[in-house]
Amino acid sequence: MLKVNDINVYYGAIHAIKGVSFQVNAGEVVTLIGANGAGKSTILNTVCGLLHSQTGSIEFLEQNLGSVPAHKIVERGMAHVPEGRRVFLQMSVEENLEMGAYTQPRAGIAASLERVYQQFPRLKERRKQVAGTLSGGEQQMLAMGRGLMSNPKLLMLDEPSMGLAPILVDQIFDIIRRLHQAGTTILLVEQNARMALSVADRGYVLETGKIVATGTGDELLRDAAVKKAYLGG
Image 1 (cartoon, one colour):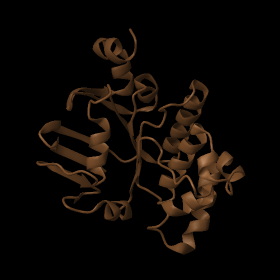
Image 2: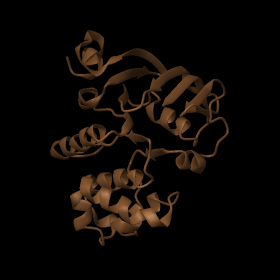
Image 3: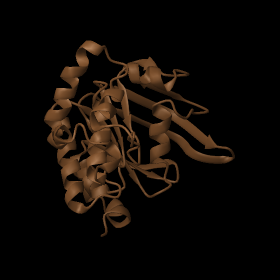
Image 4: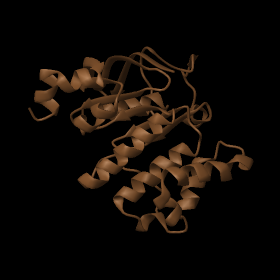
């Protein structure tokens, strides 16, 4: 579904992403793990068109994204749930969700809303509530629900557990498992390496902008170097 080949991304003189290549197959959960500053979010921002690579290519559904603008990439079936949630704080829950469906025909929005409310019953309870008054966990659910409103073929999640209490982290990862079981293809960036690898079919380990290890989720959970660096032992 997604092929990233030899991308190099710069912030001015800083070489942030160095020759990264990876792929995501239909129906998989693939995770990118690594320390803060390893380049995980930069890769997602490049894949979805917010940043641009100096080299290589990004193909989605066998089409080269090249210079395709970000909003056109959404129309092609890719949704990005950004780090820090970034919900529209002054709008209601339902208005936020409707914003996620801006590329979709109006006739299908009601059905999409119902699907999201089935995945996130708490959002249905709070659908008229102003998003800025939600808890952190509820805002993360809203950001994920907003991404799903575009009926994506690929859902990219950037640090969905950031800043959440452990019980809420468990809830978010339960939702990721359910989405996977329902057939959603997911590219997951996550600093909680143990949780990410526990739900992933495959993973890639990033260090200072380079991929240094890859394998199935189970293989990386057992890998001695990965355990020492990211899993606490």
